[in-house]
Image (cartoon, rainbow, N blue to C red):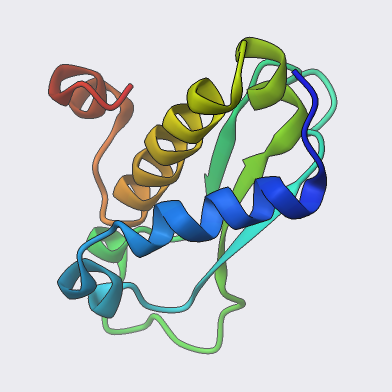
Length: 115
């Protein structure tokens, strides 16, 4: 599947627009990035949350760099057959990684259908 970076970034923005405002308002000290490729050795990784989940932040949480949510363009495009597939996969990946920011683990996400 081929898609420009600009169009892919638009889809990530559209996926974020679908997240309820109440949840977006609770997100704290996190940035969402689009990257072409995941870290070396992780060629199938669609997204990655790096940071301190809200549920693990204590009184001493301060002065840290923002958490990062990375959405990886090339792996998503590799598993999709058409634009509709990309839209769906980007939405699932964005929700999945935001859920990690809220402390929800992979096992629970899979049980909820967001795996």
